[in-house]
Amino acid sequence: MTACKRSKRERKSGDPTLFFILKGRCMGIGFDPKKEYEDIVETAAANLGFSVYEKSIRLKGDNSRIIVKIDALTPISHDDCAKYSRELSRILDEKGTLPNYVLEISSPGLDRKLLTKEEYKRFAGSPVKVIYEDNGGKCAKGNMLSAGDDAIIVLSDGREITIQYSAIKSAHLDY
Image (cartoon, rainbow, N blue to C red; front, side):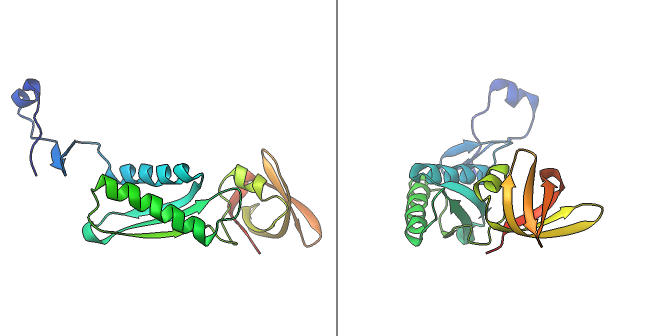
């Protein structure tokens, strides 16, 4: 580890060096290498017209692991995962700061969690399982009839149940 040049004011203050060089780059307090790789994951997806549904980045030297679930408005194929894997590898290798890594690329799958209002709207008409709060935990399993700005409507056991987004604890497609 090599100290970066500091200003005269910093040297006079007697503060310890708070910067270091990593593979030729000067980094200091507040530098978050994980954030840098999260940005790379997002960039690779955007380059191919995908979005990142979920990501997990574990930086552990030679045992680093990057797990990404990609999404698009059309179904994600095996070929899509392979294309994304090649694009992400290309960017990571160009950057050259991860000596060794494992990539796990997949789609959210048929039983995907619903995370945003946009996803609820996108999958209106689909079978769902929703755990929600209504004077104790409740579960609605059935067809999501609609998804509005404030709530969804699920047809469960022959009755329509309106569930506010704020009451939803978890929800996923239930094919």
